[in-house]
Image 1 (cartoon, rainbow, N blue to C red):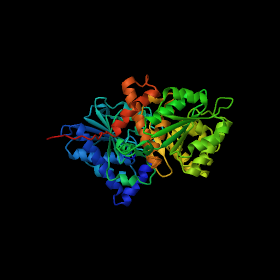
Image 2: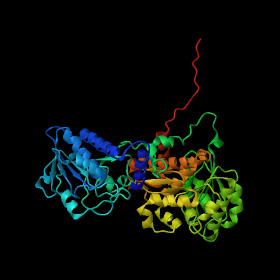
Image 3: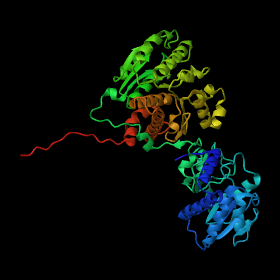
Image 4: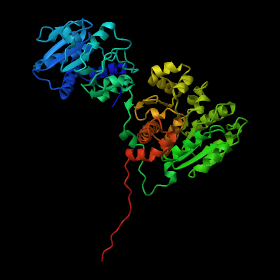
Length: 521
């Protein structure tokens, strides 16, 4: 399933029309679909009373179609036009079909607006709305009886379909029927609450219409399963790749340990940690399945740039390399990160860059594309802003576009962390809605980097984009399991690691194959 912004919906509609649909046909389909879904919630009959609030644009046109169809069912239909009648376009055509019908038109100050209706339909503003509702419309909405069932056509009026913000006075709907695809804003708070239950109806805008529009696909368990290979009897540790993690410094040893544990729990066959002695000692004391490469520390306890040659030697036969968690950002680590980017580009080894790995190249992100490095970047909002040279507020206004801009500049797969998390490459976009507010604490990103590197290693560095999408999704599932067990307030990133086996089991239920034979005489 795709998610869409208003511009992406317009492009998809144009593709549908190019494939043989008509704009008025799409409007007729939308109105009919909304009536069908309304009838599943409310018994519409000759005794029913339905109020439909219609705007002047195409959202109002959907409402006019609904009014006509519901009236044809014998119900008493009332229509009010808070913005006046449409003046042109297909909405005017639909309005003309009901202008002289048995439908009752109410002025917005009519006392009957406040009556209890079997259903009230909000068809005032569609997906192009942003900003604040007018005082007149807020007043109108405030008089709607709370005892009436409220349905929104496409999106509640007052909700921003990109940011999820809502205007004062936005109706709290019992059902939102959205057309073609969910709109990104309705998946975000607070608009998600006002939408309540959301049903998507195709109406002639098929999934193929969203191809090449830039609309992201919503991640699913089935998509993730494709990146969790079955483990047959002939497998061995080399089958699932060799992973090198370059992480940690004397004051941030926990980040490396979480990278390591998460990667091991995410299917990597062989995992090696390269770091300074203090980090290695702490990790080795509790993680027995990994191997280690000890590098010298500089005066601040970070990996010294003198270790680059040794690091390249350790990385020579690796399937995937992850770098940055707890690394610290100083001249030495900047040199190391740049050196590894060049090395990975030369050797064609995927490189996952997180945290200080990103901070070390914030002023020189061109190095990734120039080195022809197959990189995965995992920024949070602040890091994404630094990499693009914009403010965090600008990123938050449209995280998807910000992620796409960074991917375009670097050629990398970009994981823009949040709810949803967007995974973007120069050609593809995906959104994962797994995960919860319990992840908003230090260390969660270190766990995610471990999972991404583990799954990419398990797939031997192939299908990089798909593996990153799967990793983000599985990370969120494990986080949801941890929250269910421990609460969002009480869970820790290490609890997410503990739930990874169960998350993988959900994605790919396994059946072990054992030899057995029954001996008979």
